Image (cartoon, rainbow, N blue to C red; front, side):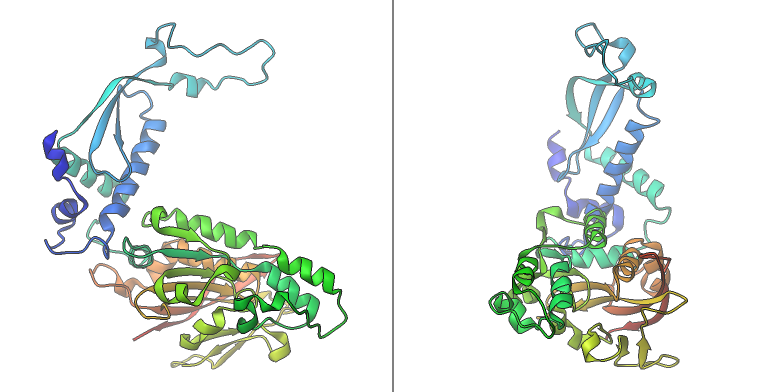
Length: 386
């Protein structure tokens, strides 16, 4: 039991993943990520085919020491253990499989020796990934965005701002948005109801695709919920763009803070119809690429454009991830591309297998959008930042 105290993230990293003795778990959270996968695999097993096991293995969050729990099968229960029967008028029908696998914890829990846990962890990792030495680009991306020593902000788009733009006829500049001054004076380029505009501006709407993206991000194995905050775009401050890691969804129309970030982008999404044609500007075209990619709402082939950008934050001491498109479907396609794992790993396969950090990059995607939904996106261009 006393040896369990020696089982730490660092010791597992050295023993299982061949990390050097001086490696920093804050920058490389491969142990936390794979321990999370092992917890999930154990839960899936004991809730499924292992539901009749007499002993259940449990690993508490924040710990790497496994525990055994002795369980009671339904047939072994005493009358005092059995649940109350369903009432005669109940409309709920018992689930035979669930009843067959119902368990009670009998007695206490006891810890396994650290060496046993290391072996269990290895087995769990092999089941999840046949090659433990393969460090995927997806793992590197999320490990750099979720760090023990830095807060991560997830920022959905401000859909109320998009509705405001439709009402007043122009986008809200960052100078007015950041200070909240756009609430004080309503300027309309076309006839509008100031009271309606004021009401819309006060609301905190966002899109379902942005919320789905936020949920998917918080469920990646590398996520650190104790260091993660969901922040509405209008509540951001310049200091947070400098000091935190950020994950942002939506274009400049729905998040004026993007005007500060677009200066370091290769692919700049121009979504203001009053400022010219809708397009993606390619500031640094490489061989075979266009300098501009036009976007047409009325394209009969329903082709859309979206971008994924993994960039340094404004101070350069952290990272930010931006997914955006001209439509909700485009943003959703970019979000699915970066969270699916397979797509990103395939595109950035050259950076797999080594212990080096994932370089910052930008991806331009082509999508097919039908009835507000986007089909699987196709990469048009990839830029690796120096």
